[in-house]
Length: 368
Image (cartoon, rainbow, N blue to C red; front, side, top):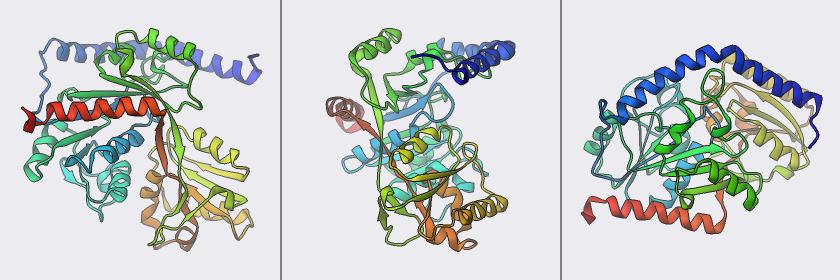
């Protein structure tokens, strides 16, 4: 593929970023390396629990698909095993251990825990920045069969029985570098702690030669434990309607996309492919929406001059827009969420599902 001036400029900018920030990346890598060394040598000891613990995490910051995978596993096992979810509660304004309730807010628990609680009301979901403290507190309140740890790959004070690492297929961790010059939270070799690796957001299932190249690059992991997944978008859901009315994207001509996520391009591209006219207001990941943001959303929507237009947001952004329900009739009437799911090829789905069930059944105290 021939390089364009824009692509060359982008590549040059990334290169310059790495060069300019290299001293800071070296210092960060040294600090993280010392910490991991202490855990590897058992100077710092990770806690293991008697019940099955599944960790879901990533090496790179943001946009790897942790929440869709956590939800996938939750749906897979919750009707067979009594399942709990423990999250960090990123950017919440509270501290310590807290159970996520239906009347909780994103400010109290974080947007992603609230997203999952609203979708799976029966699931016991808690937040705690220290999982070694949070897990015993969960078990004291609820006799669970399995606990899912969301975003816990770097939280090494707890050792999950099954550690799942996610990486964006289009920006794999092995082509990245450590913060702040790159996007990695630790060095690439951290992948060796994973039991399963899932490359997410594949536009289509990669050819065998590409898969082999990825597998060769991460040869320390059993190839049968490496998966390639895509994204699947559901019907639009009218967020504030009690009956959660559903619509198709193709039902509309003009759509205003409002979101604060790490990688909005995937959603933007999907919506554009549906043949609609897309207008976007994009914010930083986990952005805390303000009254001024609401005014901007309203004024931008009014400029569309289309009485049938709607506002689309992600499920986690909706948790942060929920506080404006009584302030904005526009959001009450026109706000729709776009559900996003992880999608496996049938053969890989069966293989992944088996890994999950085999692990839980093998680690279950009832079987020991």
